[in-house]
Length: 179
Ligand SMILES: C[S@@+](CC[C@H](N)C(=O)[O-])C[C@H]1O[C@@H](n2cnc3c(N)ncnc32)[C@H](O)[C@@H]1O
Image 1 (cartoon, rainbow, N blue to C red):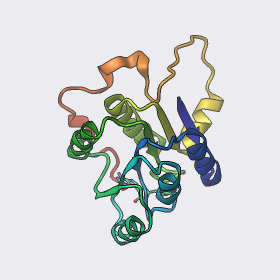
Image 2 (cartoon, rainbow, N blue to C red):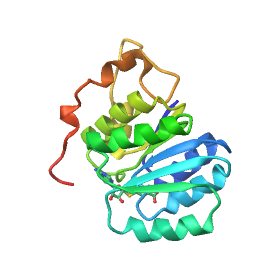
Image 3 (tube, protein in one colour):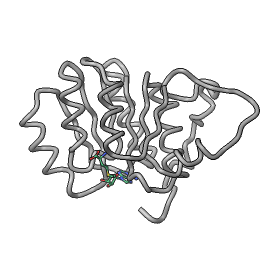
């Protein structure tokens, strides 16, 4: 299932609805770990790979790791870079795959970049559930009309199969000069 939300409280409620105790969760945009803490409580037998480019994250995530039992790996990086995705794919494959992908680059953040991050990461990791926090994408879903029906049940766009992952992800370099 692909879940799109905007309100941070709805985001955290949906995390509670979709995460299972032994899930491997990849969290894109963990900031200072406020939702990572919730995820760790929801997945006590799972694992979390949390990513953020912010310099504020490192210290806070280190503190959180000491407080909770769920293993958390924090990676300070830009999630728009191919090398970041490659690194995470290797880690995730070693621990049995990704169950839940969370994408929160900021609720009001560019929907185009957010969608691209979702599309490339979810097509690669093939999670059971994805949650995206973005106002523009939520607006698009409710504002668009569609006469044909194509839909997916997993946390990625199954109808596109592996088309979303070009062998050479040149376009994954940097998608927005604003960040
Ligand atoms: C609204 S905050 C996330 C809040 C967090 N999910 C929570 O629930 O508390 C958005 C985060 O996305 C991060 N971010 C935005 N663009 C990014 C990028 N290209 N790569 C990595 N992190 C990014 C920002 O640094 C920021 O910490």
